[in-house]
Length: 134
Image (cartoon, rainbow, N blue to C red; front, side):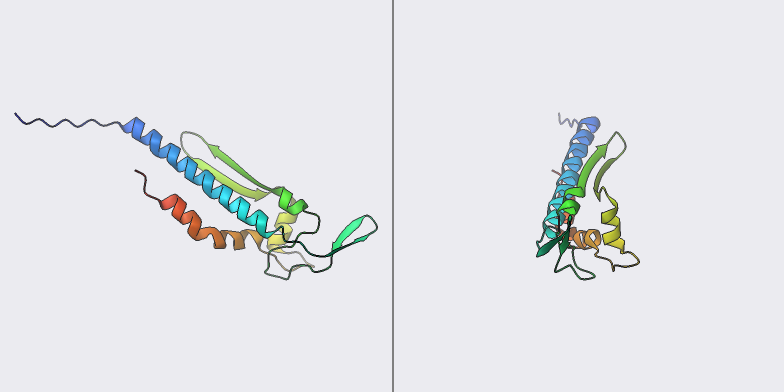
């Protein structure tokens, strides 16, 4: 007699896939965070005038912003959030400076740090996310 048995382990398989996707999203956000922090931490000569520090060789429009005090690089954060219905990885700057640099102001052309970093890291992140789940 030939017998075939098929067992569906749906909840177990779903849990393993969910856990793997969460790891991959976390790894992607961490990679993007590290890369961006490195790119916006490039030094430039500075001069102190009173109690303010000024950069003497600022970034040009379209470039990553250069470091003066390091506050911007310190403002870059990452956060993971998940529940039974979604997994979310966030990468952001927790101050107005991030918005001003990305979008520009009336007196300053944009230094698109976020969009440049996303474009630069698109292929590595795609490889992490699309890797086959075994």
